[in-house]
Image (tube, rainbow, N blue to C red):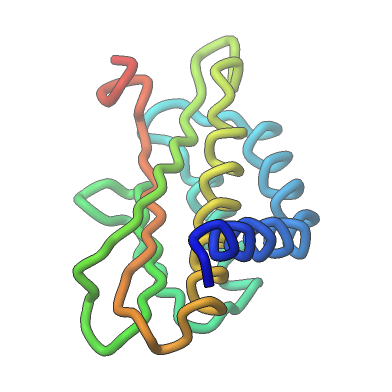
Length: 152
């Protein structure tokens, strides 16, 4: 298989995965947009994302809530292989809103895009490399980006 063939297969698989989950991704986006939560208060967004993965019940996903000493932070991993995998691909989902203007910065879209990319990458890697590669795909849910992360 040439690199171009591999690349085309990867993209096709990722697109199919996103299309398969389009309904739940739109629902997640709407839930976060409709319920803007300010820094360190993103409990509904956190819950919505974790609930989505529990609802999808995809094999091999590990949900860790309240990580790194932050109640609304999360880490969701998809691992393939017996060990933790030296190769890690990570996606960042930030979901805090601003006072008075809510999600004008588009964090609901950032979260939805990151969740979609995370699922598409995990499922595509699983289908293209069944048991041939050891890797981890990770989704980091980060609270309070506007307060103390990139915007504060």
